[in-house]
Amino acid sequence: MKKIILPIFLMLAISTSVFAEGADVETLSIAMDMIWLTLAAALVFFMQAGFAMVEIGLTRAKNAGNIIMKNLMDFSTGALIFWAVGWAIMYGSAYGGFGNNVLLKVSDSSVLRDWIFQVVFAATAATIVSGAMAERTKFSSYLIYSVVISGVIYPVFGSFTWGGGFLAEMGFHDFAGSTIVHSVGGWAALMGAIILGPRVGKYIKDGKKITVKAIPGHNLPLASLGVFILWFGWFGFNCGSTLSGTDLSIAHVAVTTTLAASAGAIFAMMTTWITMGKPDVSMSLNGALAGLVGITAGTWAVTPLASVIIGAIAGIIVVFSVEFIDKVLHIDDPVGAISVHGVCGAFGTIAVGLFANRPDDGLVGLFYGGGFDLLGVQALGAGIAFVWVTVSAGALFLVIKLTTGLRVSKEEELRGLDMEEHGTISYPGFQIFNNV
Picture 1: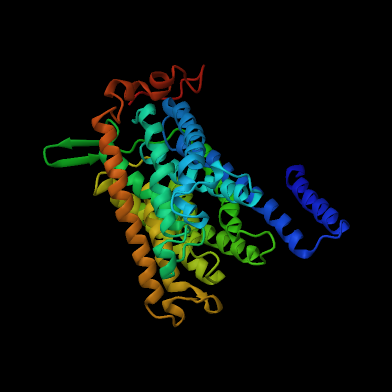
Picture 2 (picture 1 turned 60 degrees about the horizontal axis):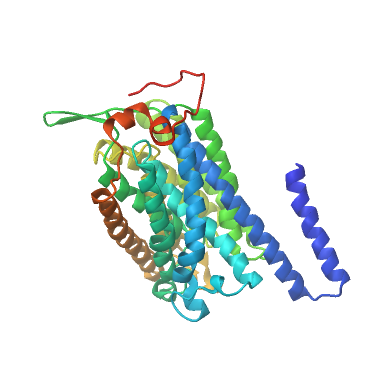
């Protein structure tokens, strides 16, 4: 409780001091924006812990330490490369031309405020890839592709949109990053999982028949904790994207975010109950995340009722998408990252073209009489993201595979990456895993 109350008292204290000094409303607004975006960035940063817990819980114990290292290092390396290169690619045009990196030249507080909020989004796009490639990727190779995703792949597409590029000029709307962040990470995860190949023993081939073997994670409570952390952090993700602490639409964004996540969890649970006979825990957890990803693009632009519909559809989609990718395409994604972030991110972006209802701001979807214009732009943006990321990430993973190598050996995979890559184990004194 103290951790929640302290920032509130801090904001009140600053507000009081500003007025006491006779400052005007504009100065107070600037101060509130500074506090709001910094706190929102901290919430989004905390999502790194959520991603780590979900991935650890849904995979085997012998790889838990490796996953912690990946989530630690993708943010650490991503922050440095986004500071040195990525920010300039994404937003340089606003400061004198594409690639102009003011971060290396000035210490303007508003620029630094914007950077700290944006770097946590870049790290999110990179860490999404980790889950789909878990349990068989070389740690050194992971560091390489995390740097390239945070420093090049994500910022380039971001420059088309939030950076003021051609998609932004066409009216493409992705409020907090269903496509810009989540689909970019999801489609990179797709290419990584395809090029890397499945875990040992995942798909058993007998002639023309392929048997799909489930490889259960070792800790569902930990995965559940991760989902709750992600849900909590998403309020910084979506509400923070108002970019202002005095924007009264913060409440609207918080409501639509909550409703979509709730609907996603419920409808994913119901879908598995109907199709599998019992309500599946991991699918229900992914349903909540699917709802959150799905609403992220339109959270500001849709009504609460529409957010429930979007979340519900995303919750249904994620179940069938996970099953299709696993059992039909035979792509091994241990945590369902491709479906949650790639597929549901694209759906949420396109859904803006159907459900947007902000006529005063020029955002009206098909279902509210806006015609097909916005829907077409949204679909185009989602499609360009898919093409850009699959080509660039595919090339990246192929180069790594052909040079340094992308995958550990079969023996290393069976023994576990904690011991083989890091010389440690995550649960000393406990025999809680097997080596299959």
